[in-house]
Image: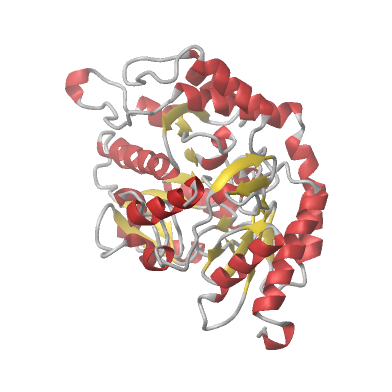
Length: 424
């Protein structure tokens, strides 16, 4: 047995992969794909096969793999110190990163950055801040969070309680925060005055819901929700874990409708897809609501061992430098246009910036996985959400690579579901 074969055997014997049916993974006739190298939009497996990274390594990678600027920043930081506690201490990379993130929304009410390590904890931070703020600032009755049907906000207990997809909540759905799930903005207007007075915050994935199957919100909905929250004096939490850092064509999705929330939750692309780091951006109003003497108990007692990781902050600063120096956002319109033109004839097609999706309408819910598996033969790696196939490449993708990705997807689609067999 070769060393690589031995590794895949050990994987099947000892690992438990997230969101993965492990019985099929561990089957004797299944060979796990072991990714060993990456450069730009290309990943290489244990057999030397190259693939285009069609989902940006689960929606994280912004500038491609092994980007020299980010690599150099991490190496430079390693030469100083890799990690120090952020609880009662500070360091330059976090200070500079906080300032740069706040400056991405110039003139707005966003002034503060609270660092954690992943999207779920960014959401947890916002939810806990919102609830604690009202409790200790004269409104203890505001104990309810509003979320939307089919939402996904992470897998930790509180974040999962905000989710609207039962499958992702595990064995039970009655846990976590007091949450009311609504289908639309109109449902908020239909709530009683008593219920509205209990609302601490509304949380939403702006413009597009990811795990719901790339479900688009109607244009103008976000702006209307922002106005509703202002009228009710309710905090607005935007989950931009997926949509942040160029995915929708602007740095943040909320910019499309000129909305600045009370909490902006970011992760995934924050470090360019290199290291775990997340941030909850918020306002001076929220921050001041936690000030007081230690005996008053107003402190925000929440945090993680690797919050504000020095390596993560160094990578994030380098990623923002790449955005500026390589004019990443300015190059996106041509890429978005080509992606849309090439995929427009696919079933159930929709697009939000550099996020594109198609859906096969079939009772066979395994078709999406089969299509993605066949797409590997044509040099494309991506992952389905049920029968929805997503293309969300790194932002550095070239026009030629976009053409290759879509061609690979179409070839796989034709092999699994020939055009004559498809339903509308």
